[in-house]
Image (tube, rainbow, N blue to C red; front, top):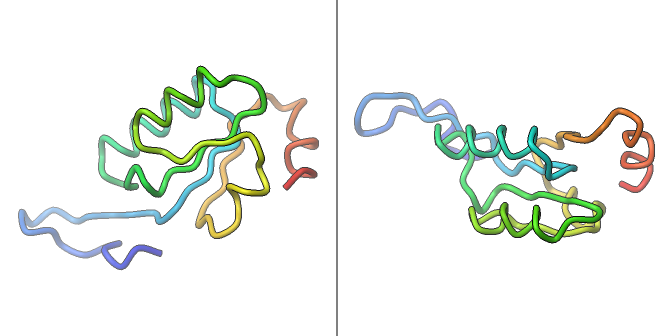
Length: 99
């Protein structure tokens, strides 16, 4: 976990960092969550990983934010403090099995 979690910033506000977070899925849900986390400074862009099975366009969008992207889940999950499934429920069993 990031050492800055729970520490006071110079301005007096508390900084909270999650550490690395992997999103399995690169759709609207993942985009909203990543955007919010980055805007609030809860996670650094270089600590965000996003995996998507089929859309290079979606992955490019996240890469533009500074996130690490890819298609192979097993390469993006190790070392993550948090893994979030941002996929359709019917795809969950397959996604978890692949990891």
